[in-house]
Length: 596
Image (cartoon, rainbow, N blue to C red; front, side, top):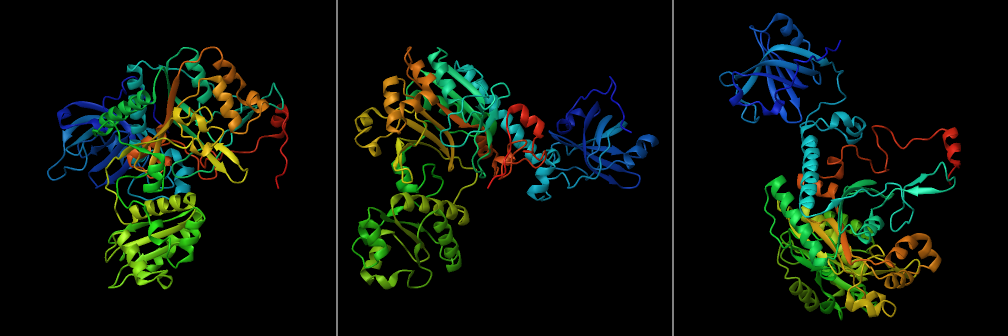
């Protein structure tokens, strides 16, 4: 039977805050039992809460009823303990605990809640499979490492609000049920009971509303916004997420980037005590792709992509020459001193990975012995092979990986292989934070399936002034006034200056193949709003979950989100999504049919 708390049961200390300065004082602590140790005439209980652990002590001087109660206590019981703080005995100090020099001699004990034996031990030292941990997420969340991550996420959110408030931003909530205007990912739809056959959408971002707030005169907007996207999940993606969303009127690209840099400097100093030098370095999209094969490059290590096209364009290897003749290129990365690690078997694995991305294959030169082993040597003269070795500055012990194809295949393939090798070869310095702005993204990307140009970002992004003349004549030349903040290979933030000229906006929609009817149906209210005086504005959205993931050193967003979804977008604990009763669907005018 659980015992009830009374007025005198007031917690004086969190478990992890009891210190030597409290010796001799009466305290009241509450929490969960980490473990109980019965030594006969001595019983010790480690009591845990979100701040840490404190040791409760019971000995010959303890009241017999209390001692008997302590004897029966097991892991995860919830206790309220009154007692006196005293120093631990000779040789019993635990230097690994902040409370390790003291213990609480218990004079009153209440079992607030008994616990069944949990399906796994609540401990960072015990590995639990993901499915079990997520099924019992409320137990998993008791683990100290997860609690540290969740509390760090809270601190990041606190600093964000304080920083932006201090800089004149207003926190304004935007609707959670909006008009469906799918751009990019699929919308999550919410049926309307009143308007049968019509649906709200959950917002993929507050984009349209925050722009309308700028038109409404609220020149600095901030929101920790919940966003929803029905897309395939990865380690750094969830169907619902939070972004630090902002918009600024009468601001340039430089103003917005500087404002975000100020936040980054502040949050890293306050939360991690790490000084981030600003201004952050910048790199164009084209430079990032050519050097790193990614628009979110990890610059903590080198191994940059090298263009071998000029070196091999006249060689005897048809794979290389045909790629160049078809408008592509031949490029490579060189892994220094990697021949011992990158065996033929490992290179075969990398080849399969490259094919999974879209490459036709992977050529290599592995220099493990006196002479380099080249997978395509029979097609080359000795002079041609030496020219490749010289171009790559290869030495004995190195491995060169080469891809030949269209650039849209070559660059991301080598970029992905570079990321794999950075981890595999231990090239990444732990505890290092390399920030980078990637700027001047292409405005359009060619869609080979539909054979027309798609917006690479949302269609409200402003092109660079010097590119406006190419909107209709050569869309591939148009670059955007947008900017991504990258940290250690993770995109943290994406933003842009917005189009505020309604005539230019309509021209942009038409360039994307939207008819006047499409424009009116999807974005008519925004285009109309522009006609009533729109200030120049721009903004950004920073992923709070991703920022917390990188700052805490977590491997996945699951480790910084309290109740995450798994890869099929379900939640194992509550088992959602679940079917809904037919009568409930009927109220909404919906019937579920069998899929193919």
